[in-house]
Image (cartoon, rainbow, N blue to C red):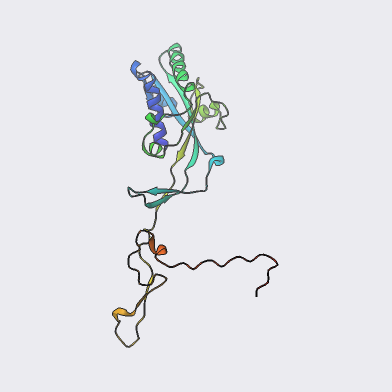
Length: 234
């Protein structure tokens, strides 16, 4: 799921015209060594925090159907995670970096969700809404200064971006539907098994369930009438 969010962010930024100006979109850690090797204008989208959103954890499982409408598997509910990115712009001059960072900011703050045309893999199959917060409000992740200190680099202008994405649940294959009744065979211990010794439980002399199933082929007894309180049985 994480790499699918990365791809969606890449498509979002490239669709905003960043790639057309020769700017690369990378997901590397902006360390001091990486910055020294950089040779072209770059937008770095660095993932540095992953946390589960426990408020959105569900308990009900979903069902997976085949072409005939039969249940073939059951899937546990998706679990939601918050992915926090540090977005920076890199160029030869600070003015160029600020211009590029402003273009990225305009793209992110105008996007509340990652559209279906940006999603791939499991995110596209689930069909759930993937939220995007490009303003950096309410982030519970480590501060940007702490991230730069951990990376060993100098503090740089950056944007905090948070994506709320679902992680697909685990699928478990379901048992095939029941099409026959239970059959019990009894034979003497010393004798061979007879052909007519089979006895069908609850489904007497029924080999084909028909349109109504095995339950529809049985005779149902009428329900006894309910007695009112105070009536005496004769």
